[in-house]
Image 1 (spheres, rainbow, N blue to C red):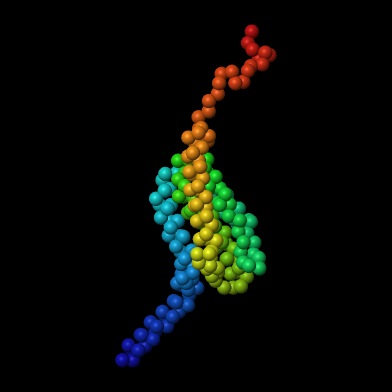
Image 2 (image 1 turned 180 degrees about the vertical axis):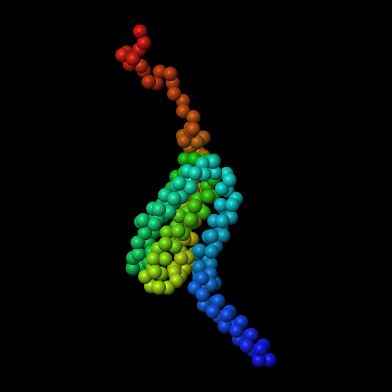
Length: 194
């Protein structure tokens, strides 16, 4: 009987110490589930589904590094919290417009999420370093968090610009083929062969 009481007490204390861990507390918070974990799952699914359809993967990864770097260098802490400029909000819809079928528009969501999450984690890590605590702010605003809203807004912009790009390509804009007439650039008289 004494052994059983000691084992159950030990298990209970271990469970309480596990629940008190910052990462467990963070992942069990409903607001972080809405603001960070749910977009992570959506982003993972979209990346797994559409990444193989990207024709210029190296260029996309380069733009992703650019968006992350821009977010890291243009963030600041204000009175109301961490402020980010997410370059992906501009980059991915424009690439969807220009590249058309070479870049599937649903990838704007996960790429913007990655470009927002990394600077957000970095900024929250700086705050955790200052306060010697865990950064509960990443995704902590739930559905109103920037990690949730910015990729969603970018996805909407990419969908609209995808439709606009389809319309413009039908009219001949953004074409990969260039038509140059023979006499478009008249030769100089000095360059003519004798």
